[in-house]
Image: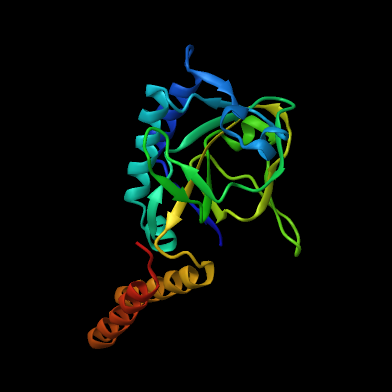
Length: 228
């Protein structure tokens, strides 16, 4: 999966989040504190201390926004979401090519999460920095991503990816992982397309009986394919 989700945060939420991250005393630490052995060797950024009250507060804002975002719910079918983390890259900072771990322990709990999908929510205005592109690599070519503040990219966690070095300004973003109800990418994408089709047909006033039948088919597939 490779999906751009626009306007995850409202203008007010974005403004308040960025102000909190820029405030003096915000607990920024070396980003390698949460990296695995492979990642620590190629990671060069700063990260908001994930155990801090500020990280939890801002993470809650992001999670609440996701809960009411129809595209996120329809496309991702989230089961569990890792507490959002916040990072920043100054000039020269980067994150070399790596792959996210398959399983992550949820901080402050005994629970673990399977990382089906990785998400990057861009927070800094595009004009405020150069470089810092998220590059998702594949054998068919690389996808370079740099989105407007408040927009988010979601992609398969098994993808090789990197963050290019920042050459001007500062890149600020929120990152997290999702365990979907549907482990398989293709099945999840099929359900998303079916759900979008049902919504479009509903808006156009299509035959009510046909819509009920389509919805029943959608929920039957969701029941058969979901993992709880």
